Image 1 (cartoon, rainbow, N blue to C red):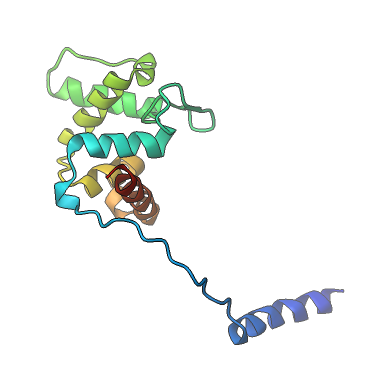
Image 2 (cartoon, rainbow, N blue to C red):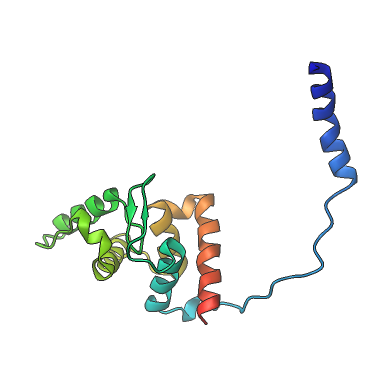
Length: 153
């Protein structure tokens, strides 16, 4: 039995290389996105759609991510740390994640603190943290956001 499995495991890549999957005869054309022309509001709307399908009550229990921008508790703590360093008296609590306006405020505080300027920087670091630009997974996330931006336009 083991010999059959090993033989099968060796044969599959050989057969796959000789008979590749045919490419589909169709392509999906999305409008071109000019990244420089994306407004802050358009980006936030796209992020909200990607994160929560525009649902302020969205909750992902596995990550404890809540609200329209799927904010985790660690993000609230990070934003409060930033505000404390700035000597601001404003603080957010975990319940604020459910409030759309407060979620957007936290997003803006986070992006400003980390000097995120372009829509890609903002989206990728929102998804992957301050080092999000270095992560492959955030490239895929940025592609989702760009598709959402194309749908909006």
